[in-house]
Amino acid sequence: MGKSNIGNSALITKVNRGLVLQAVRTLQPTYRAEVSRRTNLNPATVTGIVADLLGLGLLRETEGDPQPLGTLGGRPPMMLEINAGARTVLAIDLEPDCIRVGLVDLNMQLLDYSEQMIDRLDEPGRVIDRIVQLSKQMVKGAQPGGIDGAGISLPGLIDRERGILHGSTNMPKWRNVPITSAVADAIGVMPIAERSVHCSAIYEDWVATDEPNSTKLILSLRTGVGMSIMRYGELYVGSRGFDGEIGHTIVDIDGDLCECGSRGCLETFVSTSSICKRVKTMIKNGRCGQVKAAMDRGEPLHPGLIYRLAKEGDDDCAEVVATIGRYLGIAAANMVNLLAPDSLVLCGSIDTADELILNAIKKQIDRSALPKMREHLQVRLARAKERTALLGAAALVARDLFALPRLRYPGVASTNAATQN
Ligand SMILES: [Zn+2]
Image (tube, rainbow, N blue to C red; front, side, top):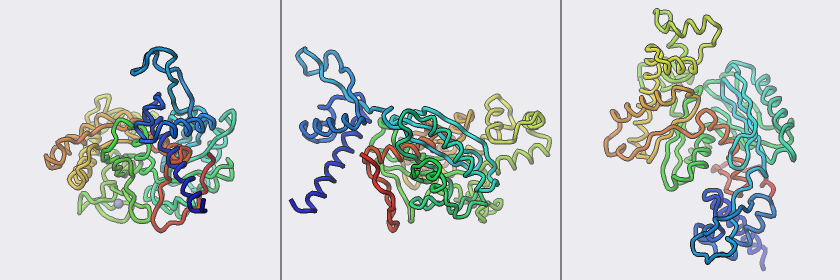
């Protein structure tokens, strides 16, 4: 056999193994025969691959149905599922005002979790020190074999191959900051870096196994706002890996100055800093009395406080939430008119106001999107809300462990070695 044929055969084995893992992951628990049907691989190939994966500990067998269809009694065949606890992933999510770190298993369940509030104007070095500290603590607690990979979700524009955060409008002090190498030095594993807005989309797609072959818009409301497009399981990625900055699309041509330098961007209505600014003005005008009372008791002014009070029935806070939903709805309606997606998924730090914001977005889409473009549109909340990007960082690693293709970007050389297995 020639060299290229050997290469091809190894690649085919890798692709087939990825197919089998993907089938088990989405169908679990399931039978070998069902995996064969779904992957179109012949039963002998599936049996061989499954034996390898059982040996590697990525799959495990469970007792099957006592009387599965098509059998004539006797011992039922064993079922297969992902051996979720066999691998542990460290996931990190850096948001301009919060660090989240978690240990995650292969079914994307959190085994351990910690978060710390930060100030978006903190020095990058200090923030990285805190990320490193939290990560080291988590890794220490990961027993028995430590971690099998790490993923990090970063805001703004990044160089994912070199793990550098180029900059984020919400974190003005962060300019070309190398971040993954600092974490790697501390934990001994190089994290895979990805933009937060992409991480959120990757996680939503990873868990939404009941929604194959659909086009989804994932709208992420965090310190800023971003949007990703996921079509048939493929993430849309723009030039040099950049896209999704819906927060800097203009919704008011004569609007306020945005932190990006432009005027009237969506973020001037819905970012954390603009929400806080609006509420401060309302307080000056004698409104938002409950917010002021909470602040007088020492609670920091944060959208979470506004959301909670809105949910509790405070009219002024409800008005702020309705405005956020209205502007997000305008931006979403523009995207619906452009792309006619099957669903729009809202994620991020929406806290207790989730339904309030969601309903305001729905109302605005009904007003602003063309009827034919929205008649089959599903608008719903994400499954993990504020932890979506964190779990997406873990899903990046799981994709590698499962030998699914890593995201590649045209014109960017890959320096990531293949992982074990
Ligand atoms: Zn802007």
